[in-house]
Amino acid sequence: MKFYIKTFGCQMNFNDSERIKGILKSLGYEQARSYEEADIILLNTCTIREKPDQKVYSHLGEYKKVKEKNPKAIIGVCGCLAQRMGAELVNKAPVIDLMFSSFNIHQLPQLIQQAQAGYKAIAILEEPPEDEDKLWEYPTVRDNQYCAYVTVMKGCDKNCTYCVVPKTRGRQRSRSLQSILSEVKALVEDGVKEIHLLGQNVTAWGQDIGMHFADLLYEVAQVEGVQRIRFTTGHPKDMDERIAKAMGEIPTVCPHVHLPFQAGSNRILALMDRGYTKEEYLEKIQMLREYKKGITFSTDVIVGFPTETEEDFEHTLDLLEKVRFEQVFSFKFSPRPGTPAYSMEGQVPDDVKTQRMARLLNLQKKILSEIAKEYEGTIQEVLLESYENGKLVGRTLTNRWATLQGPEELLGKTVLVRVEKANPYNLECSLVSVLS
Ligand code: 5AD
Ligand code: SF4
Image: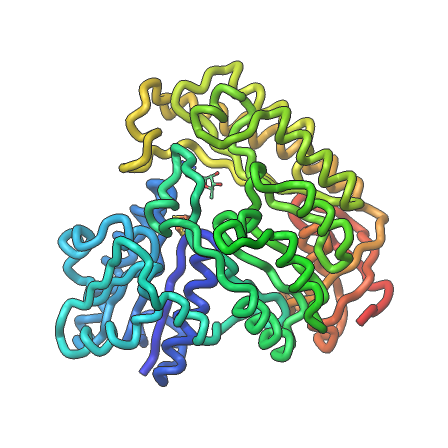
């Protein structure tokens, strides 16, 4: 029996898929090379914007054909769109046999049994169940041998007015320190060098269990064999001095932070209910720069939030110029049903969003080519994590992709490289020495 999983959305969803693969393996399933040969096909969906919603329907249309050849094949949908739409999704796409939300992943074995018995197996809970922590008993199945995601919290207690996540993933639940550390230890024993702590809002980890995210950083750093620590996503409001200090004190925490600012205008930030101003955001950046030498930043930005004026948008551009992010993920505002911003007055026309987006991308392109130049000739530390098209590929401490010529045996090693040519999204490097 074989499974195939297609994943949309954020790293949280990818990590959920890695866990789902672990569950399926424990049930005796093997990974299929393509959906055509699978007995169970799962779509792990995202609903953060309208585009990912639409993609799901076109994929389901494709998968329907598999049933013609293999009538016993099970087609399942999970993740955030499944959570948001519930049974309505099955009405729209009757090809679905199995559906569960991110709260029910641990119930997958029973759901598969139901679907195999010919029932529509649907488990979309409104609230996370008591036994949700059972999920951590399953291992993850990962493609990357050396860098691993570890989910440290689920859900989000912020109420950004544009965002569906609090609805699809529920309130914030921090995973216990003990559970996180035992997974980290198991991963390191399995050869993992880099641990990437994940959560919708990791910087708020611990607030619901009387702990602080900085404690978690110190604890993970103590695990022998952890060579690099990263985390995503941080929220500026929770990014406090304790975290900055911990980042500075722990050498294995990488000098890179993904810190979404979403908008530069204080009026828009208030409408988004983000809980900080542009000036406060810049202060956080400054604080992090002071505590962590050489730190770089990436961010998320929304363009064309309701009522955004030209002047508001210029504050967004100004933030890009001031911070000089290494990577900017920019999105046109997409009204999500059930969120406050969906029905706000002053929706911005699409052509205005498109124009503003183009200006933002242009500015960022210019900044990125300047940043790239600064890398040329420098020595960088790279953890080699894959071998593609005859080249070793890895990331710098500052989260830039680097490629170099070298033997495949170096995979999993940390090396020093010299940057020969810096392209906006990739550093072409040569090997200087092998560190460990
Ligand atoms: N419209 C556009 N972008 C959004 N994001 C979240 N919700 C929306 C929305 N309704 C963006 C934010 C977030 C990223 C994951 O997606 O920038 O940080
Ligand atoms: Fe998409 Fe948000 Fe769900 Fe991630 S948490 S899959 S970004 S809707």
